[in-house]
Length: 450
Length: 150
Image (cartoon, rainbow over all chains, first blue to last red; front, side):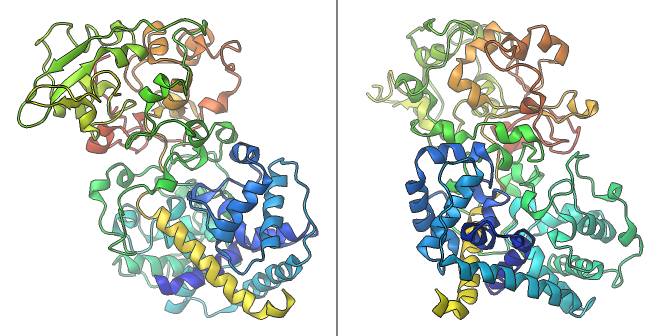
C-alpha cells in the first residue's frame, strides 16, 4: 500500500488535470489545481469545498491572515501543512488561499504571486504529457489493470474514501461481487449514482483498461477472474444496469463532485468490520477520527451532495463551536450548553421570552449488582421537556411501577426513547449511574449533571 | 524557485502522497457519518420521486426545547411515526407550524428538507438501536429502528 502512494499521488495530479487548463487567472489557481483541489475540489475529509459559501463563511470570518496560517501550518481538523505539498513556497500557498477565498465570495483580491509561475507551468505540463502517454500503454494485460488502478482508481479505492469500496477489503466488496463482474464493469465504465464517476473520472482510459482495473481490484479480494475476457454486454450496458444502488437523479459525477459515502450496512455496524487491508495496527481503527466528526451535510453520508439545498444547510461544526463537549453523541453537552447560556432554545414556538416550567426533584433508582444507583433529575429533563412527554405513556408516574433495563433502553424503550437517539447514549454510564451504593450522592452529581 | 524546478515535481508527488496518507488515515475507520440524532424520513418520498427528508435534530435543538415540537406540536418520539405529508404541512400542522414563512422559512424551499440520498431508509441516524439491530439502509427495507412507544 505504502508503495502505491506516490503513484496514487500521480493519479491525483491526473484527476485534477482537466481543471488545470485555461489558466490565465493567476498563480493561485495553478497551485490550487495542482495541490488543493484534491480535497477542496470535492470537499473531501472535511475540507471546505471550492466555491461553497456555506463551507467557507465561518472560516472567512476569522480573516484571511488566519486562513493563510492554517494553510501554511495545517490544522487539527486534518488540513496538512501547505496542503501536504511542502515544495510550495509560502507565497504560493497564500496565493492559493486567496484564490479559494475569492471563489467563496471573500473580499481578498488575488495577489499576483510571481514565484508560482513555475508551479503553474508544471501543473500544465505534467498531466498532459502523462495523460496522452498512458492510454497507449499495453492494454488488457494483467499489468494494465494494476497500472490503471494505481493511476486513477487508487485515489478513492485505495483508502476507501468517498464511499468507494476499499481495495482488498472483502467487507466492502462482498455485496458488490455478488452482482457479478459484468455489473461492476458497467458501473466502472458508466459511473454510479453513489458517486463513482465514469471510468473513475479519467476518460482517457480505454474501456479495456477500466475492466482490467476492475479485475485487478477483484483479484485483491480473492475473486478469481472468472472471465478473462470481459463479457461483451459490459461495454454496452445501459445506465439502468448499475448495481442495486439508489435511483438517484444525480448526474454522473465528475471527480470534483464525487459523492461521499453512501449508507452501507457495514457503516452501521462497526462490530462486523473485518481488519482493514491497510495498517492492521492502526490506532482506533473502528472509531471516527476527531476530524471526521460533525461532518458538513454534503459529506455526512445521508445528505445527497447532488442536491443544491444540501450546500445551504448549516454545517454542525459551525453551530457547535464554543459549546461544552461530551464524549459521545454529537459530542455536545446540551445540558451544560443550556445552563451556561451558550444556547437559548425557545420554550414557546412564538414567544421567545417564555420561561421553562422546571421541576426540581431527583428520583433515585436502586439497581442490581455493583453499578452505582441511578439518580434521575427531573430538573434537567423539565428544562427541555413537558411532563406529558414522558408521563404516563413512557413512565408511569409512580415509584416502583416502571421496569427499566439496559437492554430495553438500548432497544429504544423507556430512557432509550431519547437516550441513544438524541440525548446522550448509554456509553455515558456515569451520567445516570451516579450514586454510590454506600450512600451519599457525589457532590458533582446532584444538581448539575446532564 | 526557478533553480529548484526539477526536484519540485518529485517533491510534489511525495508531498501529495503524504497528504494522501493523512487523508487515508482519516478516512480509514468508517465513512463520514451524519450527525447523531439526524432523522431520515422516507415514508412517502421515494415513492413520490423526491429525496427523503433529513431532519437535523441538533439544529432545531439549538433553537427550541424538545417540548415545543414533541408536546405542543404533537410529534411522536418515533422516526417516521407521524405520517407527515405536504398537505398537513401547508395547513400548519407538524413542520408547517413553524415552516410557514413567519417563524421559519416556508415550504417552497423543497430541497432544504428533501435533501437525503434517494433510497435512504427511515431511521434515527447513529442511534444505539440502529447500531445494534442495523439501520436497514436498503431502499424500502423499512424496518423502522424505533419500536418505541410514543
